[in-house]
Image (cartoon, rainbow, N blue to C red; front, top):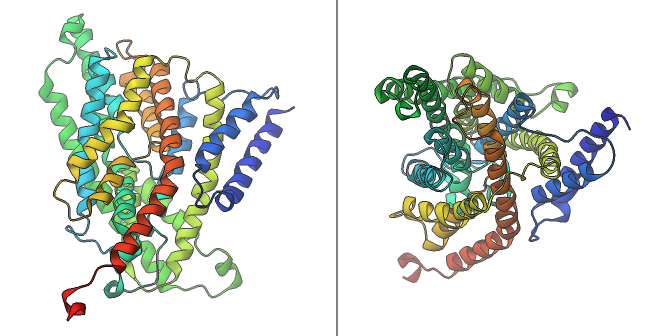
Length: 450
């Protein structure tokens, strides 16, 4: 059987699954992303003669395919958020980004260095790639689609609740804000290369800290984040003016309604990356600007639905390929230490870091527990690892742990997250929604009591 025919078979199954599974598994304790993975494992286990996908052997393809899925997911996530952009209203997002994510990175990096005896750069990379909540696979606990309500009429609690807003906004922003930490690992590895080459020993591995640290702070943190924000604002505003200033007037235009979301995604990302900004941040910011341009317009649903359609199709394809990597031996380098660190990340580190980040928040403690526990790991982490390992700093040195070991660890974390979070999310969210409804109905304000 030709490889091309097998590729068509895989794509057709992925598309069919993306259409059918959400209908079958609605409100059921099952993760349809996990089913894609299992389907991929089954397909590539058959004696069809298909080459087994391997992210280590195909780093560029892995990087760009996962990159495309993530940026489209970021557009969909931004369009979902109807909460007015206000520093206090977005408090949960800042807490998860400013406290929870760095604590998670620090804890995983510390375990990688102390338990796995990784080089500091590799340990930091391991922490950085597993820290972000994935915008692609968090569909069970994400915010609802955009509504056509006005700014004054929007009630955040009725819209999506604190849980869905917090996790959607976190997933939208931390895929961009985890980039500085990934770059820190890359810069650290490069500094180690230079110092080792000059000194001839690993003892001087990191050399003088200030030169590369100042470069990281100035360029990879301040400049690239600022450019990402500005690029997103500009593109979002331009696309919004075009969409709402020129309504569809022909049959062809109406057929293509919603495709502007894809155009805005690619434009924001590409334009920002061309001037060395963070494209992930630009896409999410562009989505927020686009969504906040005109609250009442029903066209937002078309933009959102088109973005989600493309995202789901690409996600299905990537997860089927991921299933193929599992039967191809991706997890072979996995050790008991990797498994324990992965489980510690999902069951201990992220929940505790989340609770620390949510200390003092206005949300109910039940909501804080769910927010802290449900940080699903997924395709965004694949991109970060592929991106970092493709960089010269990691590709040219032998002091960094083998790529196979990092991919095995990440593969286990994603499978465990899909299983744990995917299966439990629907019943947990349904229970929380019912509890919130009962809590709201049973609450009487002083004015109502009078």
